[in-house]
Image 1 (cartoon, rainbow, N blue to C red):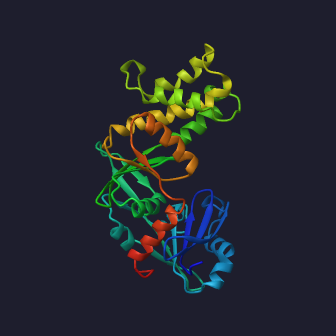
Image 2 (image 1 turned 135 degrees about the vertical axis):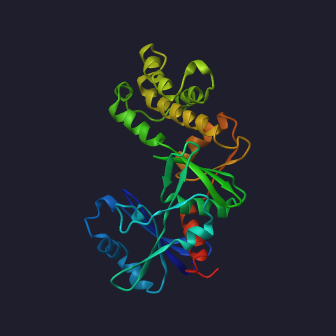
Length: 308
């Protein structure tokens, strides 16, 4: 095992993850807990940080520390603002904020990114910026990134610079519809069904004008079940495919249709999005499981925290 050169922290809303990262971007040790920022009591971030990382801090007293994610949000340890796109990796590195702890260690917090669409409406991301850097380390020629999840991000890249991005609330909408709508009440718990997922994806992807927009297409999850063409055990899979299909259809009008989409995120989610992208005729590629650590290491190098 190589010696670690960086302690990387990914501190989100509902979870805490930390990595001992070596000079090649490989994770030598890792830990995780459910101590997301929303569980931390007022004024308790440093105590939580110290409690979770005490053995590592003692064993590596000079290791630089970089923290990304919601820890830098308004609800986090300290609010770090957003950089307005376009943003280069070098600009992101210059914007790190060093937060001193009582022990004298510095925790370098990463800002988020902000953009405005063609109508002047704002969009933001926080935490994904290090994943973007890691993805660009693995795919330096990438022009489009898709980071699927609760709030999916589609990101435009030009010459390694984040030009703009768009957020789709696909995952959160699926969870809300499944738990709190009539569509969810019509479904029963079942394993994911590929045929139902693909059926939903085809309807979501379709550009037929008579289908209408996403709001109308959602109702087909109810009507198909009512007429017996969709089993209750298939409703959730159909709805998942439908929402992802609608997302890809809408994103395709915003992105260069001929570029390869680089998928960044949990393997299970990337498989779903990749399946829909393939049905839509998009080329796509994946990233490694260490993409966050690779991005944190590159950012630390650009900031001079780790030797180049």
